[in-house]
Image (cartoon, rainbow, N blue to C red):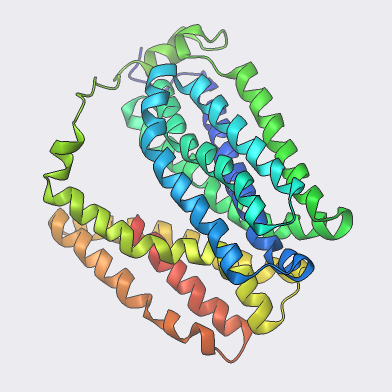
Length: 341
């Protein structure tokens, strides 16, 4: 009964909800960077003040990311995701209450904590709803929501801000997340408790359950060279991506005079190239494996190629025009995403 795909599609509705949540998290995360030139001009923010906001977000995100997984393990995907989304929505909407960069930190921190908990909760939901043979596909689909959110933000946020004011940009996007939260609480159940799951779909989901994982102590992890190699790699490459996310709209504004309503085309181009790089990086590594390369050689070759092709980013600040800069930055983002894949 579980050898053929069942008629039931409830698990893919769950995947669609997860996709929407990831997209909304990136929209909420990127509203402030898109509004930075406007807020900085209106309220005389310093670059250091904005940098402090970015630092506070990253620090809170990093700490919460480590701790939230244990919380989700205890309460389950439904409650864990609901708590995460509630926290980040409160923090996101609270941005509208402040005009000082220093005070806005108090909104940025709960946003970061909630968004950090969203990914562990999404993985827990994928483990509950998808058999191993479909789990990677489901995770890949809802992870793509981050790129969709990054593309949508510069298209919708400037229009809202110019038409209704910058505060409404936070309130309106926060309202979308509230709608998602209501849908999540109303729809999400574990497969055995969901009324719309057919016996055939349930058998398919439970055909290869997730094996019980043995707890691993931090002390054990920190003794492994692989742990330190992974952390060092992320330490070196992740600032590239986050720098672009937090400062790219302001760079286009200062360097090329791009107004907020015109952020859409250049930012969308950069994030579309990042999407292409993410797919190409995974494909290139898999292609090398299929031609007989060892996993170690295939992955290191892919990493080297991505790192090499990212080098033109050093010319972005001196690019003769906007679209030359977009090309250099887009290539670097594509290589970063390919490197991560």
